[in-house]
Amino acid sequence: MLFRVLAKDQLISLYDILAVNHIVGPVRKGTGRQAAPLYDFDFIYDFQELRLDYTATTHSLKRFILPASETLCTFTLQQESWQKQVELNAYKPIVYFGLHACDINACNRLDKVLTGNVFPDPYYAAKRRNMFIIGVGCTPQPFCFCRSMGADTALHGFDMFLTDLGDAWFVEIHSARAFEAVNGLQCREPGKREHQRFLEVTRERLRRFTCHVDTTDLTKILDLEFQADVWQQWGEKCLSCGTCASVCPTCYCYGIEEHVDPDLRHAAKIRHLYSCNLIDFAEVAGGHNFRPQAHDRLKYRYYHKHRGFVEAFEESLCVGCGRCGQACLAGITVPEVIASVRAGEERHV
Ligand code: SF4
Ligand code: SF4
Image (cartoon, rainbow, N blue to C red; front, side, top):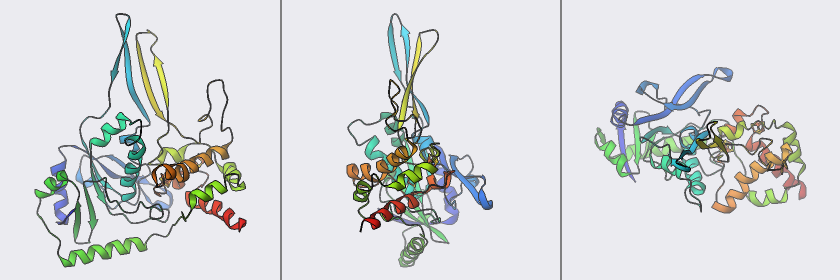
C-alpha cells in the first residue's frame, strides 16, 4: 500500500483522468424524512454532481453488478436446432467513485459466494472485473452498525481510498492502475503531520458509531433460539414485501424465468433477483410451500446472513449498512431483531 496527499483542488483532475470511462458515484436524489437529503448511486456526467460528503445511499451497488433483472442467454431456432447466445452484460469498465467501506466489503463478501465458490457466476464475475473502485471515508449515521459486523474498514477490494483531512485528501493506493492515475496529479508523500491528522480523523470517525450489534457467539445463540417466540412476533409485523432484500448490498437470491416467443423461434432465460421474505420464495412445483409463514421467511433471512454464511465463510453476510431497517415500512431493523433474540439467551440463564 502506498500513501499520497492530494490537494483538494486536484480531485477534479483525478475525475477528469478517469472520465474516459463511465463513472458511477453518489448523487443527491431529493429530500426525505425530516428534510434530510436523499442520495443514491448513479452515472455521473459532471464532477459537480459527485457528492463525496453523502451520508448513505438508499440503494446499494447491486443495480450495476447484480441487476434486479438480467437476460442470461437467448435462443434462436436455426435449421431445426436451437442456437444459444450468451451475453455477460459487461461492457466498458466502470469507475465507482466514492464507495464507503461497508459497500466495498459487501462486494468482497458477495465474491466469496459468487466467484469463489464451487459454481462461479460468470455474469457477476465479468462485472466485478470491470470495476475500478475509489473508496471514501464515511460519517457514521445513527443506523450504521458496520463496525459490529467488521465492515467499517476496507482492507482490500478497492483501487484507492480517500480520507478527508480537512485541507487535503489522504490517499491510500492499492493497485497499479490507481498508482498510474494518481501519478498524473500534483501529489506528494504524506509527512508526520498528515499521518497524525489521518489517525485523528480515523479515531473521531470511530467515536461517532452509536449503533452496535453484539455478535458474540451469535451463531450458537441463533441455533439455541431457533424456536423462540420472538420470531413469531417479528413475523406478525413483517409485511413480506421484500424491500429489505432489494436494498441490501448482499442479498443475491434469485429466480430464473424462461420465455418462448409466440413465433416459437426465439427464447430467453432471464434471472430476477428475489427475496426470501416473499410468500412464494420457497414454493415448489405442485404448489407446496416450505415456508408459508411470514415469521419463518423472516427468520430464514437472518439465519442465512448471521449463521449459515458465517459457518461457510467465517464472517457475516450482513455488513451493517442499516439500509434494510431504513427502508422497512414495518420498522424492522437488524439491531433490534438480534437484540430481541439475545434477550432470549438471558432468559435461559
Ligand atoms: S422485514 Fe420489512 S422490508 Fe423486509 S419483508 Fe418484512 S416488512 Fe418488508
Ligand atoms: S441485512 Fe440490512 S444491514 Fe445487513 S447488509 Fe443487508 S441491508 Fe445492510
